[in-house]
Image (tube, rainbow, N blue to C red; front, top):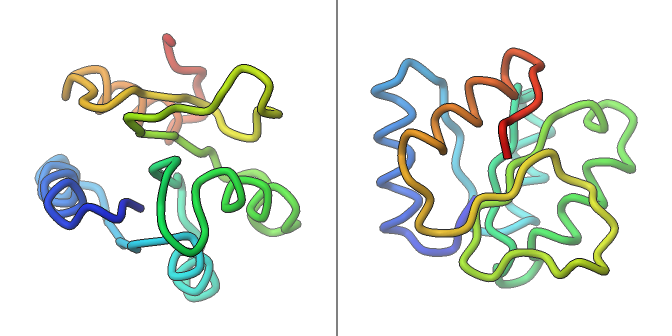
Length: 116
């Protein structure tokens, strides 16, 4: 999820080329609607988004029994502050290098811990 359509389109294309199935959303509310339709292997979200940002989305995912196990990657220019309760598995600062981004996603989809 990202509210910047260019970033959303770029990462969608890259992930599709890597063989992943991708479903996009522009904010947390839209993401929750999509998650009701199909269970993801991973959620990638920006931290700062309109309507519902990454912090609230992470809290809602972890509070939902069917979604609490889904790994979450924060991909943001404004990452969470140190005082924030960590409800995500990895945080990558924009612009994340493609190799690190893809390695992190691959490891989390396999159930491994990312190297960050």
